[in-house]
Length: 322
Image (tube, rainbow, N blue to C red):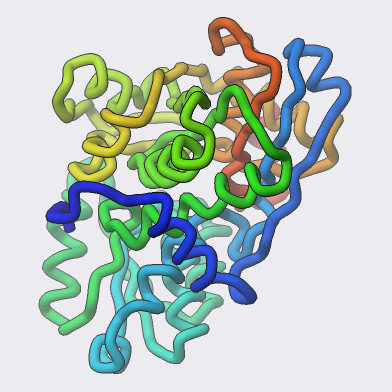
């Protein structure tokens, strides 16, 4: 759905009303140690405390709740490496409908099990040889389902923007907002909210070094496709930005920082040991960019979005031990 050229602050505010009482208003944490290491006041928006353990529930519910009664009666579909899968599955359950989710075969078991636990039917594919968009669209068409994509939809983007909306409502002015980037929906929604409220704020995205499709695309002025990234940050393993998300991010995002898998590990360890929170690799990337000093000219007040915490104890331990 790329026929809507813009998502507005008003769309984000409408989404906030729609998800109120269904999605959690997640906490904002502070750490004096983090402030000292960075040399700034850092406000960490913890979407690892969101329902399903990640920000994705915001957009999934905002989109699914606007479907017609006829569409809901037939069911919904999605494709996802994990968090959007769980989000759509839970949104379907909340709205009294069914969900069919296309997931990569190598999706972490904890995410696949959680998706099934919300009542969804799971269909798998090989992410390195299959086109998930084409397979997902065919699956939805064959079964008469309405597809709720992970980021390429204005209602999904507006829903994701509610995280930044809440953060700014709670803490006030920010000089910069740092956001993980996968397909680009979270940063597109966050930038829409942040720049609508604070026109002077800098919005910086963070990608894994091996998955810099958005950085390359912004620099080229067009969408650039890369090989499917191999990174511990499975939620950021996108090979090309969405058309709609790219059109928004091209206008609103001020830059992209890159971080290594080892820097992600360091951020996960810091969050666990010093902030007492569990963060999955993709969720830790914005924090990693700050801790690894990958942000140029660090301003005084910084917002950071922790996008999720869906990781098993076994996988968490494996990653921290490299």
